[in-house]
Length: 187
Image (tube, rainbow, N blue to C red; front, side):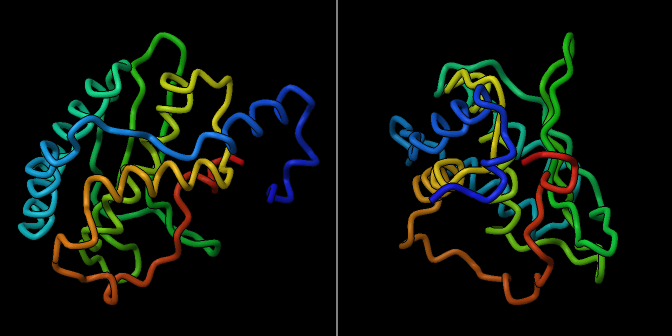
């Protein structure tokens, strides 16, 4: 199924969309070896320490990009999510010519100022990383939200946090809408 905006894309963009939609997995070699880095992110979130969260997330980003043999990405963790009437911004991927690619992730909800749940935070980070991988790993000319895109995000999450991990669940307290970079003009 193609999302409704597909019809508004140019023929070249439709080709990229279809390529993105067809790629449904990001296979990692020995993902279990990355779980200590994932645990470090979880622990830093529990400590509510922005600097530690940023360091742990940067370490995970470095390990993932090295494993996938693509250029690295700078991670910046910010405090409270920006929001407006449409919702909260969870994360943002940017890459300007001549600059290093950057992922920005916010650690606190806008409404209550609570640290976001681990799974929500990790999914947001992986969502933004998938934009990076669209350009450098899949070598697409654009990064669209397609079913394949969301399957790649879930593929990474499932390898890093297997169902049997038994991690603490604080998602019930985190009721913000899922709205990563879509508010910033991404399709």
